[in-house]
Length: 108
Image (tube, rainbow, N blue to C red; front, side):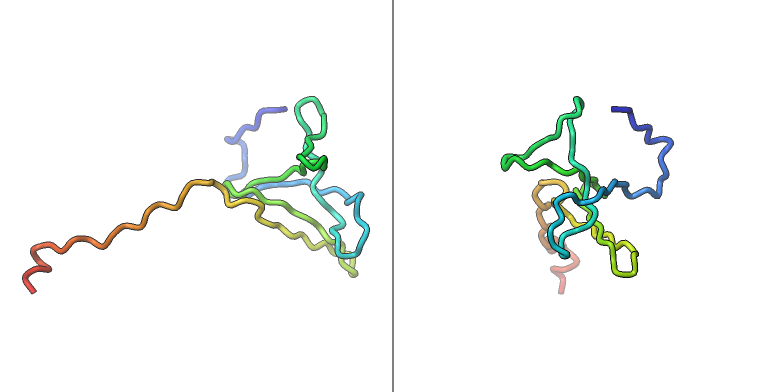
């Protein structure tokens, strides 16, 4: 895999992804375009526990996203981007307690 040089990247770029035709589409409600299957460095398809291939996803600000495309009746393409994770799994920072009263507050 080639190294990505961030210094040459567009600073306004949020992310990029590839969509391919959905080979398993059986109903109109299924997407026409989906992410390609994810592969390892040897070109082997990565599989999940259920034996289905993982899809190549992308991140926006550290949040994993998945896109799908639908060809509309007027031949335009509708792209949907769904969040597939919450980003980092860190616990929320504790809320700060109200500040203690100081001498100024105590005089009233």
